[in-house]
Length: 626
Image (cartoon, rainbow, N blue to C red):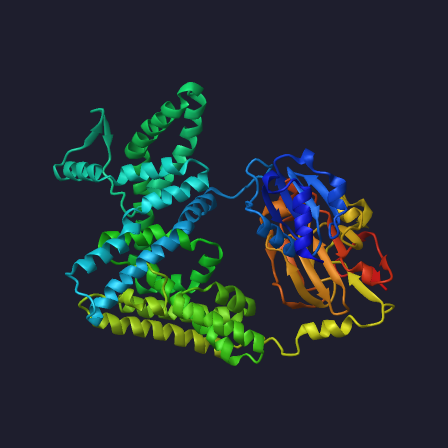
């Protein structure tokens, strides 16, 4: 398939770039949100070579491509400046996450875009530690002072950066948000509040409403709450202001309502919440001491996996702004990062598989030197399982050692070998030794633990060679497919989805599940596992390409209620558990749980015969391919 040509023709037939609001893709389909679907000629779209069919559902214009949808999607993105997220106005499934999860998601979502700027500023602070130590910079020089301003600017004015990020999260005007943050950080406001505090007085708005003292520099939660309030006030003001006065009256009212609320109520509440969070974290530290650092370091990879690590950023920043250093979370994070590197290094040395050695080696390098642990975490330690245990043991040990030495972080640059200077206390040469010992012990223990625990190595006689041999077998060789689910098997033609019912993706069968578990229908390898967890592609050792698509339109759940048990590249045996899912909750959301099991390369074979319909158990034979 000529992906570029297919993409170009699709773009033309859907009305061009100007008619596209957003485009994403799932396992088999391009999902467009169009400004005007009526201008699209469906017949012409379906005649494009490479297009298997179209569907219109949930506010989306869906073009069915099949297994090669990812490559076509990349070419479409190259051709235009498209949003790659869902249309805000399109129908969305309800989200039943708990309030705590939602709060964490908001804080993490607001912090994540700002982190690159904070890391850049933090690295300047690292230079300000290293250069004077080397005698290359005088701390009393103007250059030092200027670099200090450069390094501190992003932190002091961080509420402005987070305000802009929060505006994107809450879908409100970023310039109003930035203005609110600027008001909180205005020198006159800071002077007014500090003067009143020193005098034991209270600042009052209109001489009636008290303004609670709070320091908003380096803060996070106050501005997030303020922008959240703004997201409600702005549309309200827009609704009540006459059109003729909107250009001047609306901005004035938005600020006149939101700013006092931010200064009098929301900001102080946010400051209190931030202080409470910090107090809770450090209460644990105070009670458990160095043990707490070891415990957090040991479980930190799992905190990263659920995306909660950004939530600790405000706490770390608040502590550094208050005391000048942070001696808990930063140390745990350092040990966790280095442990991932140490474990990956052990895999790189011990593995006999050339590809794995290369992946593990590069992952170790990025984790140890730069503190980038995702390649090690997802590509090595989690994938091989026992190296994750080795990393946790090394991280916990290093955390305990760092806690015993009372190691401190004086910056928040990504914890790694290259940012070692941020753990050095000025005037305390012992801190250099303590930091080196902590880092060395962490790497050594994680390396040794991983090496001794071992792991199931990936053999050099790769699976691809097995598949290549299998695909040249005579077409009349019988190939069996067993049921991946317990439930009721029905003909594919009865599925309430044109893509599957019309065999556009291939022939097969469908199962209405009674149990939220998917097992391997054959011996093979996981060829595709879509990130939302709802669809799995398996390449059998006999050359079958099998797609298991759990439910219809379940891609819209964005992974909610799905728990993958294997990863792309894993070899599986018939009956191995591939995926678990919450069947009842998916039904409660209104989704059809009918699960097609399709041979996507059906055309390579003479016949695809259905062996059994009605009640089936896991591993009952359901298809015979000749």
